[in-house]
Length: 465
Image (tube, rainbow, N blue to C red; front, top):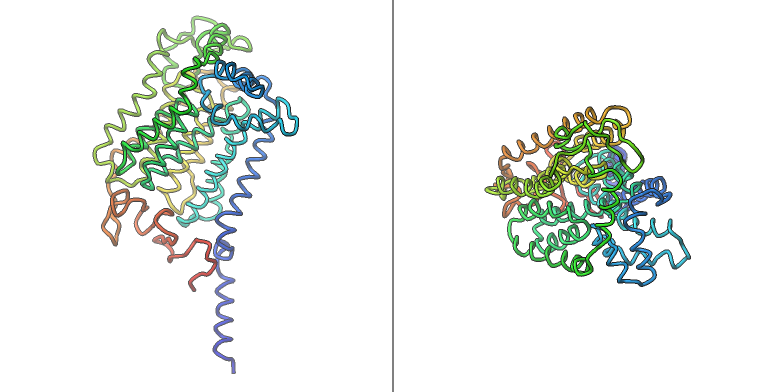
């Protein structure tokens, strides 16, 4: 006669074999080791493809001269020749000395300065993996979210052109929004300040992130201003002549930059030949007078106006609506800036991935995949195949549609009450919760979805039978 303990052991074995792969893997390996290895491998491949040479890149013209001066400890020339995004070089300046340890040259300097930016994408990718896993997303969806953050094709293009700081800025903006969602105003302010110091365009993320905070908004603003000033004040005192030199080069090589992928394109004129750095640009338009003076302020003012319009009652919305608002603000930057190029969309995509992971728990991040493909095709592939006018129309078609649909969602979004507590997600008592029956990763280590029983996703490898 079979003993009862033996029956229990056999029953346990049958249950163990019937479980899915996430249930069979140890918690620490599934949450940390596996995503870290996957993100690092993907980022390494991306860096190997993109960082082969700094020649003919913006980095060679704008960033390499001040970094060479920094290696010689010539601080006057370093601060005096910094480009407009000089704060990013100041933040990453310790990495400029790393190649000297092994006698590396220009290529080693280029790669060492890109390393913290690529690493930031890896960290965000692992974070999105963990949060997607906690929300009940299958490993395939977790992997897609991770790869979109750590090694997407637009980030690769940013490295090729010589602007890895765009990746770092996007990660810092998203991290600030996540900190605001966790009700940590001081941390959100510090991350915002670092984002603005990294590149000035990040100021457009201030309003969405501040709006996400249920309290401590002034504290976050003070921290953001203090941290940004800490890095930018030396640049202001030194004058930053590098940005003016780059602008003068662009002007002498074909006039004001006016790309097809922005809302002002069809206001331009076909009457003159447009000449770029590498010769004539067939089909390009010359910009209308004063477009730069009009467009650049609107890049900042339009997101602020949207935040003001949505501000009343925003605390009663799910907290992750702030991530969608951030994504809209970052895409509006691309639409309103006459200089828009392919890597400008990187921060928008990172914010979109973060929103989708929290707003559509358990589902594949299909919206983020579609947006990535739309960006890459319309800005990376189509320009070589179709006319600039058609390329502009395709880009405006999907991007304007996205902005309108997102704003409609934000305008019509209604508070979803938690079925047990009665609190609204994003409010006191319910801040940080997801949709019905789902606890966010920040709220605890046990999650449940309407379609499955609760399961523990922390380092504890034991599972309920």
